[in-house]
Image 1 (cartoon, rainbow, N blue to C red):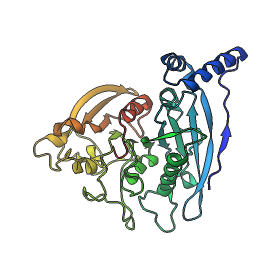
Image 2: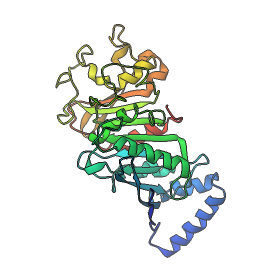
Image 3: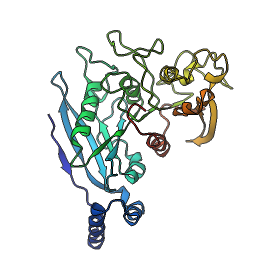
Image 4: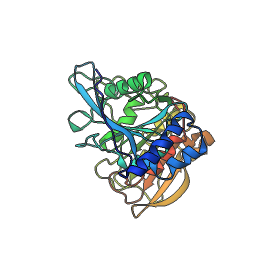
Length: 336
């Protein structure tokens, strides 16, 4: 059951500018590939939404779920609009969430979809567990709907669907990368302060080792984590070693290593030093040193597995919207 509610957003308050914008919007609708049209939007109009609103759908247990969306004024690319799903943390809602992406996703004509987890949280499961909200199925059905029907008359590019989240919402990419109906549908994912565990009854989830059944998607993964994150503190120890001791701090590439191992990008024992990652960049994130590693010790193609580790960083690494979107949009093709 789909119930679309559109809320049109004025593009400018000035009547003269509205006329100017309308004139060029007509030109863009007819000739979207024109450089002049693209330049006009990129010089400031990309922050305006063409349409934003909400929609509802039901999962197989009869529950109704809500998701919110934002479609920018930038014309859709010829292959359809990219879509970024961005998932809120515990206690949050999709309503108005992820606004930090607007200046970046708008400029690329991407739709931002922000679902609301049941009861302001997320059921951490890849499968549909009895008696629990079917949040993974909910997101799967949104994808089905967008690919089949578009959104508010706008086409969607099935090869450029991206997924990410923060805190409790950041666990979800790892579940959805194992769920059969979704694991091959994402061009790339981003995880900001999330991990992975499996409920006993979740037959679509495996955390004990890398398996071709559960971790076969070649999807690029960007994982961000703070060394002082006490809310989502990765096992087995509470403190990272300096320099990192990869025999103990194996969690640095956990759980993305489960997918990396299936594609020749992680050995498991670091016997050759290649599991340790390659330091690619050091920058400052919110006043703390951030180090970006990848697994290119195993080959150039392993650059798709990246970790940003923020020394003394707390829970959720803020102000990373541009960096996250830049990573995601550099990949296309369902399943990575």
